[in-house]
Length: 546
Image 1 (cartoon, rainbow, N blue to C red):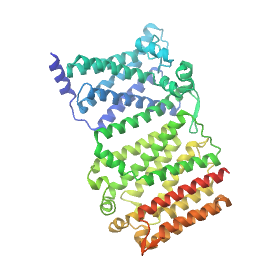
Image 2: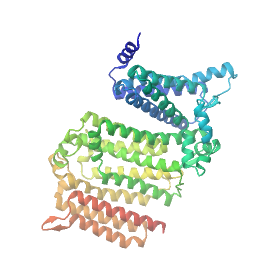
Image 3: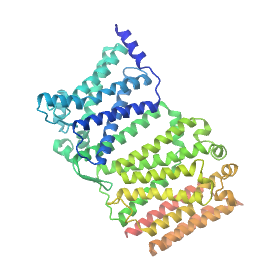
């Protein structure tokens, strides 16, 4: 069989139609088999459920990133189509099942059953250079083991082979070999590379410094990590998760630019900042009332960024859920939204919403499992609020109360994440009541911009029932009361003047009129009031620390 016939055979074999769900299910099945084999060989040593969770996250994210890189190399260098490349490497990733088996067999045959320690290259810069030129160094029982090296060699061979039979160009094939080897080596030594960047010793770091940064017990956003393997799994999961998010978004921007930009424009920045503010409020309450400590570190920063991303994804998943149901309303009130402009189909839009909901929970679970449970409750409320048959947003009072509870859950996520005991035991009840009441009487402000659409679709919000003029007065009064309640609830006179000023400005922003017209449009009103509330929150925080 000549090279062209061989190439045609490969392309014909792997050029099959595959859905994203099938691809994801296949990939996860391979990961689960790999983990099952690893733990079977280790005789399923007694380990906590969280160990298996973090091991699964670490393994999945590492191989997801490797999978994406292999596909990109195949598309860009070997010039094989994206669909075919994905299918090829779903087959190719069966290779990851075998390294633990190979190590086990070699151990039995040549090392009297001694266990191998398969992880990363922990070394100094000079040590890494030596390992690079000697195919991962001379210690295959510790770090990059025999089985892993065989898998890497076969993977590079597959990439090189595909490039040569597709392009028939020697230089391109050599380039593929060099690039793929460098990428495998960089991923294998990533903890060392991170240490060189973030450690105070930088390039003077050695294997002990790498182990101290990656495997030592620590606390990340209130999560106490004691076991070295848990430390490696959690810390590397956070790194891979952030990199994977960035790479995935970049790929989507490059391949689906019009849709991607349309989705970004629909993110609703004020509500997004509102949710991030709720998270910050929860963390602030944990610091003030639960004696939580935010220890500054590289991994704390990564975890904080990821938690913010998780909240943004969770919020956007509710936006998508709402948009899918509210199309008739948006045709009147929000004609620029993606479903109305036909930049994306309802099916694909809904799939994105489901993915964001699941991924937001996964990210949060990687940081704190208790917070992930609260986020699940947040999504449950969103579902009942937005969708039929209940669609509770149709009922005034109930709708705003549910929205306030959802907002409060985001505060709770911030509190539980940072709280040393990961519970609500130290959450002040009077502040919980204040927040829920304030959100309930203030959140109808968001309905001002959708009056016409809500009215046409029988959604009975406060503005629809009372009309814009009276509704603005009701909402303004509620917001003013919220500011005043904060004084009495927190029992500090320092807030009297700021609360009066903020409440008065918010009231005037809502009801102020000129020439028989409101001075500010609904969107402008929401933005200004949000700014006032944000400034007041900063002053309130300073007063509590005073």
